[in-house]
Amino acid sequence: MNCNDLKNMISAYMDGELKGPEHHLIKKHLATCRSCRKEAENQENIWQLLGEYEGIDPSPDYAERFWNRVENRSSWREKIRSIFGPGDMRSRWVPAVGLACVLIVVSTIAIRLQFPPPELNNVIASLSEIDLDMVASVDILEDYEIIQEIDFFSDLEFIERLDQLGAS
Amino acid sequence: MLEFKAGDKAAFEKLMRKYYPRILNFIYRFMGNRTVAEDLTQEVFMRIYKAAAAYKPRSRLQTWIYVIAKNVSLNELRRKKDFVVSLDDRPNSSEGSYDREPQDSITPSPDAELMQKERKSIIKSAIDSLPPNQRIAVILRRYDDFSYDQIARTLNISNKAVKSLLNRAKENLKVRLADMIKED
Image (tube, rainbow over all chains, first blue to last red; front, top):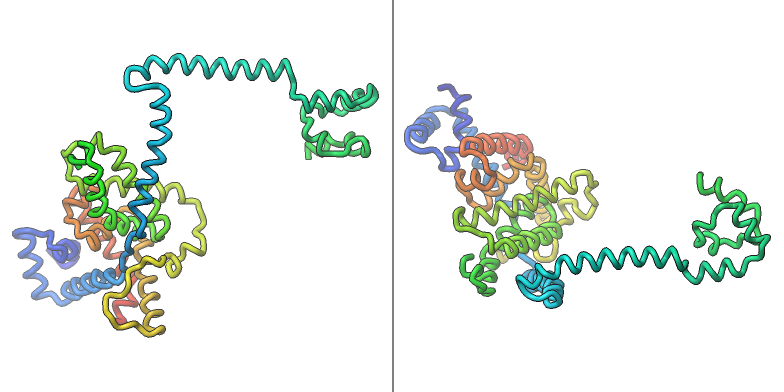
């Protein structure tokens, strides 16, 4: 074996990870080879140098912070658990809760379609027939929040150009 | 851990007292930022807490904890890969008020302190520049005193691969820290 082959083993030798014949081989080689000895010294120096990178201490409240986190995590779980009961009771509740969720979503959508929000009704009620025609022509009723935010009756040109503004 | 599995909260506190500082420093040296290290260490112990019921004493507890810490750190590194490092994360300002005080009772002069900080910053940059696996191997070996076998189990690689990893890491560090070795 030449120096190059042995150099790859110096790191493990310095870390005390070589056993038996390999350990003796490197030990014997270092005693006679100046270049490899220098390499070993360099590695040792680097290792010592790394020691200057000191560690940090945990913040004083680390345990408290941890248990708070555990508490927050378990509190919402326990709340749900207390509603649905323990173990096998929960399995009976799951389909019922799922069905209830679906019903709530469907009902909300149906009601929303049937009865638009009162603010929209008020806006529509306040418009004259001419206004309604005009509004219909500018095709922005879908987003009545925009209409509420702009003083569109005072600036018809702006309303007429809304499509273009929206596209830009 | 088995005591904690049996519902003993005090047992988990004992485990935290033993491993929290070690995991914090492992992550700190890997990520290079105190705040991130604090948050990720909390996350590691949360995972341990949640997974305690599933823990089987097949692997050593220490290895199991370090594997979780490694995974959490690598995930964070992947998540932040495209993020630009903020000025607050730069080496000189990443240390908070909880950094260890110098061990000796002599207060260093401002110049000496500055020089010490600069040296630490260079060493930190050298470690930061290593590819993740090399960095983990160096940290585990140098600061956590892990054997090659323990590093192999933590990284899920062979003992031979650990030898090669550390060999390459030391070569890289030698290049990065060449000026400091000459100075010495």
